[in-house]
Length: 481
Image (cartoon, rainbow, N blue to C red; front, top):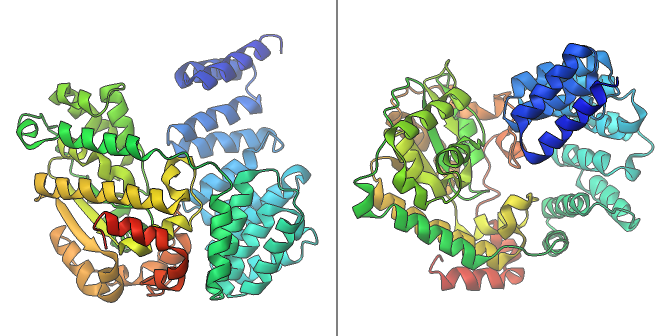
């Protein structure tokens, strides 16, 4: 133990500085000395997760738990990772075992219930949480219960639980409180209590400072546009990537329908849905090492080849013709994508600007979407997205496909047939039964894409017209409506 503790402290320090390779080396040294040191496997698994290597993370988390199931939150992290990789039965087993651990029992029961719901056993999930006498004291249980109630349409039951929990005023975690308020707003919307719904979402968004800086984002989008101006782009190098397994990029604003479109397309046997991936951003960081976008002017074809190989090795399925990357904000990087994969198809999905902006305002996002907590900021962000997309359409007309969310809703079969034709794929009926696809969707749209297409979200903003006058004014000022 005398040799292990300094090595473990060193590993934690290296992790905190971002030196994951060095940290992993220290942790592997520990395992040579003591092969049953569970915390080493746990920390290696966390590094795996940071590097988007879920498969290796699951392996190391299992090793950790087999040695000591009480190790930190290893069981919860394993269950979450299994869910994220559509290993629903395995996740259910993991969470069920973890319910024996008192310190994480509420979170384990929540995960157990979520696994049951995703397996289509929603009534079982409801009964499981309902029998817990302490449900109203635990936010994780209340949130899991609310998602179940939304599916079963027991709206008022979940509303009462959230209101009861919020009334106790002992929730110190602002992020948890935001999540509860947004969920309450969703429930009120289902009950057609639109005033109460908007108030709940507004309270959630006002819990944290509005940190978005419109001028900074305007400058970034202008710099991207200048970097890829028509006279410069002709001289830009491109990668020589010839992989048979090509990425298809779905881009757009968040809440525009990217998850639905991905779920429809990856229900095709020759299409793999990789979800929202960070590898384009990682490739940019690898090539530019700061100074994006201007440093892209000095990038060589060799660097692009290396970055393209890194991307395809990390993301693309070798079993499918196409892999879908649906990171919405890749719209910022279409110039880079074109250099990495000159032949790639990029699908931009758009939605009614008012519906899209309101849906963003109603959604619980992390800090990477700082614009999402204020209507005026969302409108500004949308305007810069729209400006940049107009520019990309002029620059790369052969690669960009535009599709409207409303057209997918109203003319599903014809729109999807058109996309499959562009991808040179034969029609498969499974694309119309995307909701039967057991793949786990990792975004906020998980519930919507796991059910038949419905049109409740079209023109939804009209239910909130009195409360969103500032949004309408801003969108009009940008000539978006």
